[in-house]
Image (cartoon, rainbow, N blue to C red; front, side, top):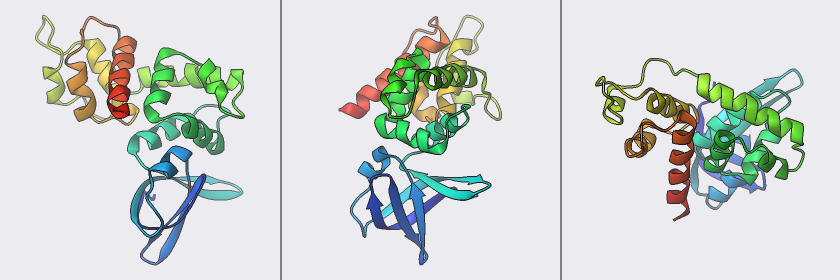
Length: 207
């Protein structure tokens, strides 16, 4: 498995980039959002990658952040959504916007991407909301999470723990999400905690 590639950027197109590592050029299909974050050709770059294998093709996809890679993985897990459609969606939406739309159940927003119809958009929201809420990470939430939302029993709010795990499934680190969750009302629902955390993260990135 190729986890990432780091080297000299030798080619940059609308949805494609070539990174030369040790004399080998790795062609990565990608999103417009990632391409826009890459520097000029000749500069050193790093892409987090996903090797997509099917009977008639092997393609390498690369993304500027782990969050975008995580969103890509989630999208291609949806029935009827292939890597081309996934990168098109991520060309129109940042990882924060994508995650917020899924968490808020806004399927209509996905139809703005060319080639994504209403039924596919609805599947994206339905399948990913369920996956995010039911996905369990390997191991338990670390001891740091015990300090973000104390409850009467002295433990961690179930909704806060679930929100933290869901955000980590989406590619956000505990260091990014836990401090924000710690300032929110632990009585909020899991979905509301996720949506508010994503809103805060997105607002910080706009500044």
